[in-house]
Length: 247
Image (cartoon, rainbow, N blue to C red):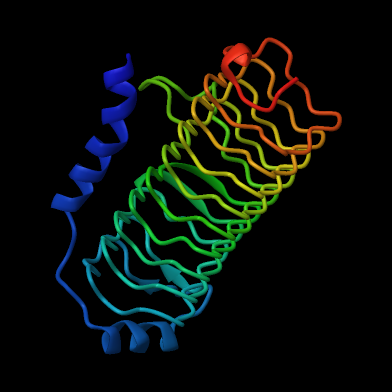
């Protein structure tokens, strides 16, 4: 089952890499966006946009479903409210971009630059291992696994070894998320839901965990040194004996 859980998103990504269309240039993308409207969005569906500089653009009237955005630079661009399911985003640069209220499903965003990105209110099921989300706004996100839709194995947000230092995860839903060895130092997880999350080796130094729910989560070798845990729930956690900073 572990092999299936890991390979399913990668398999979906591989399928849509094969089916992408011809490459476009920034000037062509800009022209399409300038003519686009809500009723007639720019058709970037499954387009090959790899390695392009698409920074500071407004994509809110664009259809990017299944597009290949590997290593593309979309820093400080506006993608708010878009459906980005099955896009290919490995190594993408989204620093400072607005991805509030987006939907991202079945996507690899490994090793991506997501510094200071606005993910607030988003619904994401993606692989973000080794991504840099330092300073990101993840408030009110719904990144928990949908247990009613797991016919292909457990699909969940994976943030192994991700940098979440100083990120805002207030009220975030991260049930069953994979956060092994993630760095959440000085992050705000007030009232966050981490039910049954995998937090082995995670770092919570100086984090605000007030009111957070860690029920049934795994915290083997996690570091809670100097974190605030007023009202936090640790019912049924596994590995508490090896976690540092928890009394």
